[in-house]
Image (cartoon, rainbow, N blue to C red; front, side, top):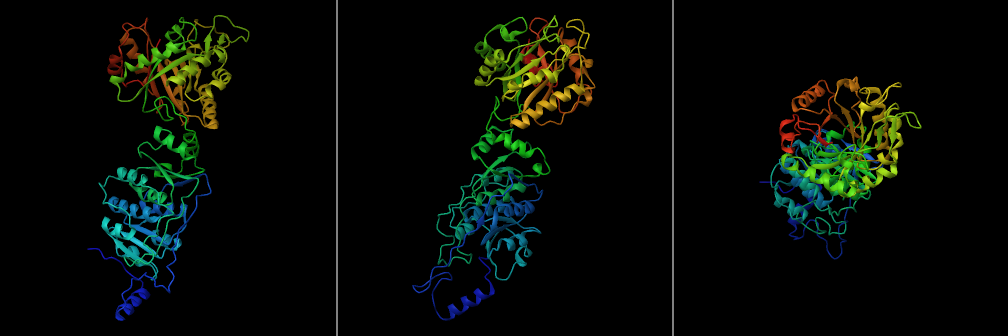
Length: 548
């Protein structure tokens, strides 16, 4: 059975004198002559920095770090045992009701309570004796082992935890209503129910928002954020990138925070985190939701050029009709995919040419004005777009920069086709072209910079290949850009045994992290695979299937 409270020595003596005199009066009661007890409030503030990371691996350290980030002082603190999800969730409900930080027992807990200047501590759960023994004698410690105890002390409608699943508990705590700064003091002034100081929550901290993984170590920190009136967006520990979830992107955009507190070990020592949060806060959503191209989605594309069917099926109709065709083609794959299947255009922007042309590069550049209606139609219909470069004698970076205004738009990626990357004395169709890994790296580095500097969602970067020689020194490709999802597109055509052999050969010694694309040639394959066969017989299952 829980002990209801431990009073300071001076208060115990006062209670004894009152009882001896036969005076029936609550410890916090006041007479007509006595003023009501002072109602104390915590002092809170948002961190000055645009990003604060609470990356502690243990729940106690994370709780102390969050308390230090938001609370300058607090007349009351809530204390819960480490590793006990149910007790911490109960403590979270108490903390949010009181507008007080939730501290998890550990080496830093008592110093943090002293820093806060807390004269009252609500101790929840099965705490060791030494969890509070080092606090100053003047500190009042009230024990609350069960929901009924917490309800009595806080006046809140509190229930025992539904389960001990950490992720579910973190989500429930993040969803607790923020405390009302205008609510009656807790405990009520003059109450004799317990000995905690009479407190009321501070006003919600403006301009701050928390991003937290659903790990159990985040629970107390999330509770403290809610106690300070700070909104919390929870993401899976297994996929903590704030760009990955449509809900997270929407929540961060709606929050409009000037200061974000990131909670979770995944965020410790991550130099890209601030940029990813800033990107998520734009609210831009890619087709299928969120701001990541891959993983978690699959794509089915139509390949071709605007205004002509000679270069692929995409141009056999106008933009509106092409959208309908791409959606219908993608829908045929959905029954065979556990991931959402996104329709896509691969839109040729530069075409390898038989003549040198005015600039001598054997590549014809399609005007941006010709591409834009296709991009607009795709964007409005939830279709992803990749523009394709066939550079001739020039290099990929030079051509990509010509289309920066297109690539600066969300939902538009880039494809490099080395078959048409020629040497200074070469012409199209006389040989198979190739590109060095260094040239690819220069292009991806530039494109990643466009994404980063403009706060854009991740972009797909497609590398077409059907011979190993087409990408020289492929193993050395720079795969370090989180702004890009890099994909090798196997372009082999003909009989299925030959296509499968090409597929396997291209996978050999490929850099880790590459996604993979498969092309179904409508006229050249013998036979062309159906959607079911493509998903069943091609292994690993392709992330992108293109029709040409």
